[in-house]
Length: 385
Image (tube, rainbow, N blue to C red; front, side, top):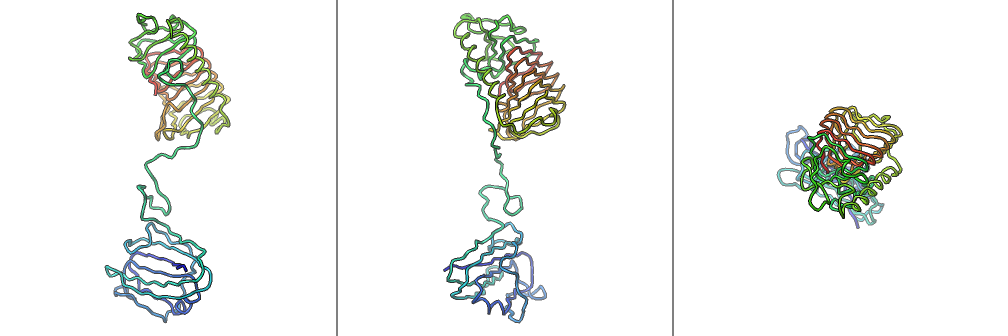
């Protein structure tokens, strides 16, 4: 045996609750149940007290499957001012009918009509609110809530660079090039090592290299300790480490370039200025320009892969901005051409260039620069994420 109810909780002052005679007579054959709870009690004139029962009224209530009223709380005596409607339908065949009129605490009245049936109910109660939010902050809209947690988008996997503490992987280096790395004194590089291979240390200029006694690495005032500089002709184990690191860089480039399917093809014809970009794979058959700030908005684990057929140019004093918890280590810029970060611009992410990468005066990077030719620095701040 099951009991079905229609719950209505209304706030504010209203007239007395009237239950029509025909409803009482029909209760024995109608399987729907009405339970009405008012948040206050008044008379017909709006000032009286108590709950009146007037069978002379013949105004029929709405059908039991009427639309749910708005509200944001559960149907209970402890909530005033909100409206919640619950509706349930049942099969035919009533066993008994009970009418209870009870006074509730605090002067409130509750009128309930409960109809028991001999069959199972077919409808479920509909509620527009819940007393328990589980730590969420309600938006005030029925059935909706917000939390402080970021909801990650299902996107591509990160491009693998290798372990940061393994000198035989690309992930150990913040700057890695095959032909040369040049520097105008005044740069500050940290968060990873600097490496060149198969070119020799003579291709690393503007650093004031200080070769350590065993000959496996150099230090420089431009590279923040404990990070070091490695070149192809240094003593073991540097040469084989650099060889595998360069192979890893090339593999990362190929991986990023081959990711499919793309989520956005030739977006904005390559002009990203002023845009906010969600995680995903972006592909262009042209160069990409950032003439104004561009924002990458997502969660800490979200990934962006930008596949660029030609060059990447960030205009003077413009920035790539990360928002919502996005991390530079999960942003990959794969380009077949050259990357140019102009004067005073700020860049975020890992640059994987088939050719060269140029940082003009005062430009900054939170990420990694990996070029299959050369990298040029000019008083830049470069930090691995």
